[in-house]
Amino acid sequence: MKRRILLVDDDVAVLLTFKAVLEISGFDVDTAASAREGKSRIRSHEYHMIISDMRMENEIAGREVIQAARTAPYHPAVALLTAFPEDDMGWDGAGPDKILVKATHTRVLLQHIEKLFHSHAAKLSRLAAQAAGTPAAKNAAPRNGKITSIAASSEKSRSNSRKTISNGTGSSASAKKSPVPAPEKRAAASKTKISPA
Image (cartoon, rainbow, N blue to C red; front, side, top):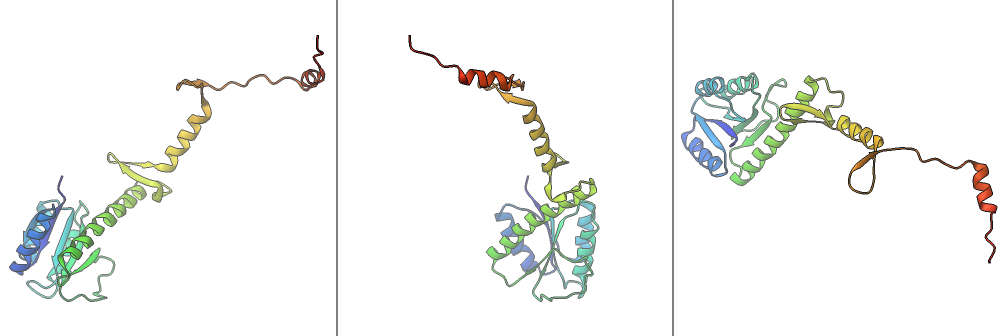
């Protein structure tokens, strides 16, 4: 399944060029030419990533798009595409996951997008592990919509391996203790000598 991206920018040339680059790279891309249209699409569709320009209808229109993306129930990755990057834009923890600079070469932009997809997937896995109450969230990974603890799985396999031993034919047999001769019998056996006939 293709990863879906919503691209929001009021500059039609940027919108169409970047859309073409993303589609050639294998993404399914929707576009919006305003913050209002972008917010509407976020509410009516599901996306893996939202990429928005900052300055559209007004200086902070992109902030509205990013806030809408942050409150979307499907938790997309969020990137800000801007020609005017600033270190501190006063996001208070609700800003974009990544700031992409418009003047950057398209190959570099695509690399940043791929890295963002990977880091966002890891973030969602950690959040899902925490929501499930797994004590060691770093040892948890999603599998078929469920969180499976790697530590618990390895402990279970160690427990099973203690219960069974291999009988040399590829199958398993229950482990049994072999009788150990008493110390007196071992000592007697070691003193017995066989004399030549």
